[in-house]
Image (cartoon, rainbow, N blue to C red; front, side, top):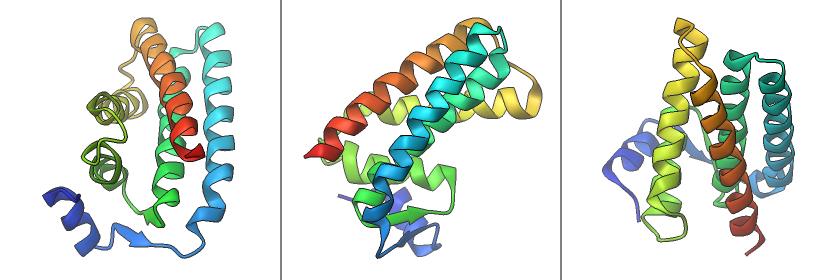
Length: 143
């Protein structure tokens, strides 16, 4: 089931077919796990900005793995999130919570990266969300 937003992303070539996409799934999961590990290390060092950014990128790579599994690639963070909604949430494979988590993660990452707006609590929340998303992503990808 495709949302209007996903259809627009496809029409604008921000979501495109990629024949070798399936071969990239494990690479993306590895990157997601590495980014989560680096986020945890940054958090321990009280570097909450980087922990926030790295946590988002862990979620980004998990989402990318899910999209690759469907045979697509993204050319936009917004469209990647919309693809997760269309291919996984609206299909009942992934709960709506994960769509919201990706949206929030993108906003928190942008705020930390572009505006220097970050804190310990949101950084910790991002890490927890990224860990949960990676776990559920791995379960879905094994099916």
